[in-house]
Figure 1 (spheres, each protein chain N blue to C red):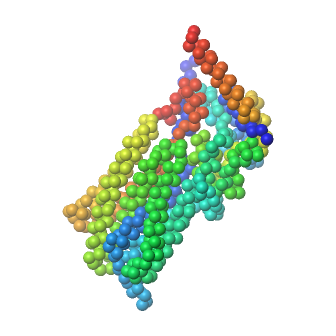
Figure 2 (cartoon, each protein chain N blue to C red; figure 1 turned 90 degrees about the vertical axis):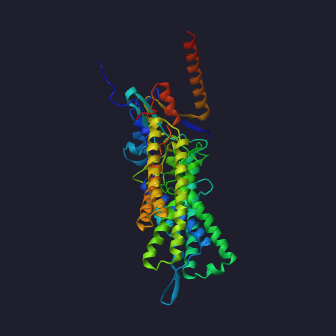
Length: 324
Length: 162
């Protein structure tokens, strides 16, 4: 008989990327990272420059510069419904904090909730009482430092959540939290840059405007270089079979491509042509790159083959590695 | 109570998937293998079948990562790891954490489910005609595996010698 095998030798069932977490989780991670990153950069800017644009509405004075700088918690709060959307039973989302001793989902719930509460408190107070930044009592400074710590924790948590999944080798690396932290800071800087650009069309552009833009362009350039370096390192550390390495190689190349495009736009703005369209282009490249980074890291998460499959395939001389 | 475990002999399994059927009927009332707690992994081209259920690991990652403590261990009940459906939120973190591809997400109930030894009388064991799955004392299962490994090693050494 000349019967031929109609099925591939490998069992692709066990080598497919995970499908448990999809685009909703990617949006949640992206918004949490971007919000926390913008808060960190905004708070440092506030400490360094303390910009202030006060407007009068119905006799009350509001500081819209502070609203831009410290608006990160709003983005984080906008991202959390996407996590709830991904749950099987959405009404039980409050149960998600019951096991903080060993579960990173529960810890994340607490970290993000604390950051949103602290960040929004600072935002509301600074929006309605801008004078608090001039007097800056010690209790206010303590609140700022605490919220900054939680902002860092939120940005790095998005990577730790994935790193805690031990049997997806692409995720189980200490470089992933670092990569997500740097990406959070770069996308956060970009949203500050674009929103300041937006304000520039609404209120008269003073010295503050160019000072802020130049500062964030400089931040952005440094962060892009660091992010490219971490991405390259991430790929160099990751060594698996050919099929997986190829997939990761393409995804890393695509990400570096987005970053380089954003970096070139910022470089051109800083040294040759001070046109706002270059900043918008850089912002868009980095936004798409930041979201694509999370989505691709989630989508490429191939779970390792269970040990008994491997053992059975070894004993019966079937090899699945590099196939399927 | 003596601790018992499910032991699978893949050499006996014919891939009939009766275990999946009875498991789904027992737990859901529906004859729907996709909702079964036991899954038969197939290598059709070489006629190899492996029924896979939860291993109730000593260090269970699903228990560690569960944010709601819905996934928990019951030492009084064969030291099994089980999921409380009333607490599960369906986040699927346990599925990602498990190295063996379990638990499974029940799309109708919207929660994660897993093998619970059918409360001490596993239906897959009861209905498996070729006795590919057995529910034996943990100590005995270990001894038989060691014996099997020793026999295989002896055969291998014998073959190498001659």
